[in-house]
Length: 176
Image (cartoon, rainbow, N blue to C red; front, top):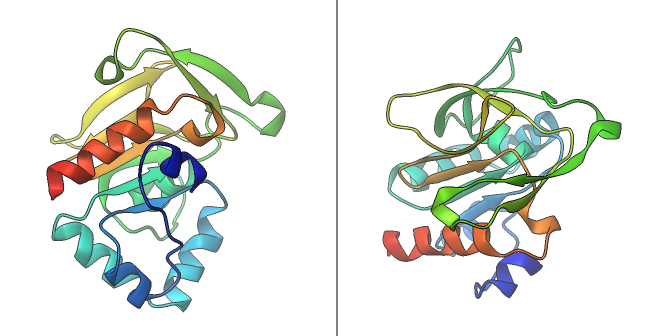
């Protein structure tokens, strides 16, 4: 939330369908995907999120949030929101001890490499035809966009670089 606020947004927590109705966009950050799907189910947020995204609300999933947004999780029967036509592989870059900051080329953000922080990060194994790959690392997609849905394997909020947050705020402006 602090990273979004530094980029110029007003950020609020969304825990109920009523909270969701009051926002212009939704970010689902890192965490544990099966737990988050259970909580979204328990609090009645799955269908309201799907409906709002279908209606054009911008959505950004970072790391676990991208797993939650994906259509499929490789080699797992894991429920997802199915918002992003990709297949992701959980923990694809390794365990916690293999976490790393990598200078990542993201042409949509300019020429300067982005300091991408990968922590037990997923990668993208398959993209649908209308999914745009914005960045790759190790031969796999790590930042994608499909219309109003953004997915990042890495954690932009853990850096002092606000360009990915700024990119998402531009998506919100486009949707307005």
